[in-house]
Length: 83
Image 1 (cartoon, rainbow, N blue to C red):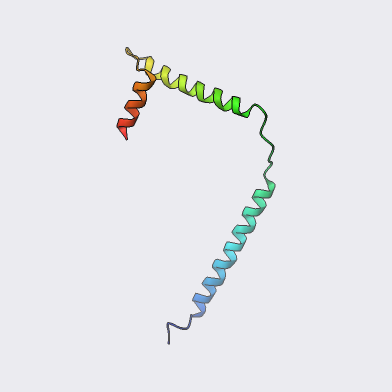
Image 2: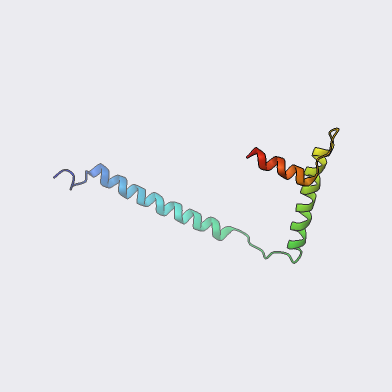
């Protein structure tokens, strides 16, 4: 019979969890509504490409500063074998 009935403490815990979940949902909703969203600028694709190219050049430069230079394909191969 005990397994069928919940104690007052168990019922209060369920109610508390439900209230906390609702409060969390309301807080998240308010944060999402408060976000300032603006459309992407027309040059977004170009900025992404430039950033990727700069990152690639910086990676190559870091390896090239030693007494040897690895080609980008050799660097990719070295990274693949580390996994």
